[in-house]
Image 1 (cartoon, rainbow, N blue to C red):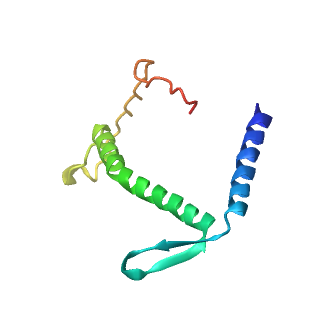
Image 2: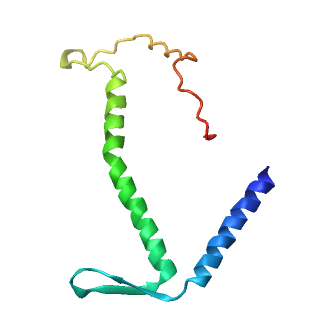
Image 3: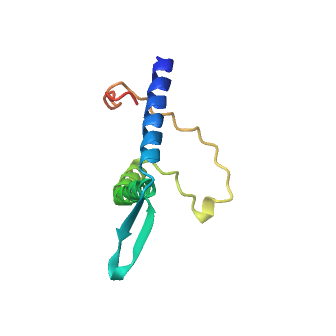
Length: 113
């Protein structure tokens, strides 16, 4: 199975490499106010792909932040020490670790991750 995955990766690499070799012609991208950018077509495609990744990640940031804030709100916080008790060392037993049952876990993902 490992060799099959390496063969698939090699096939994808050589396909993309052949695409890059076959698209070395200059392409012109026109922007506003008469500005333009001349570059090989493969670089234009790579720049568009990278720009899409950046825009997609920036679009997902607010959702990530909300998820992190919700997860942080659900976590139990450590008890705050008052200034009167700050100098006293109080020996307390650590809280037992929460147990996780099979019903608490999400369903197994189908895509293998």
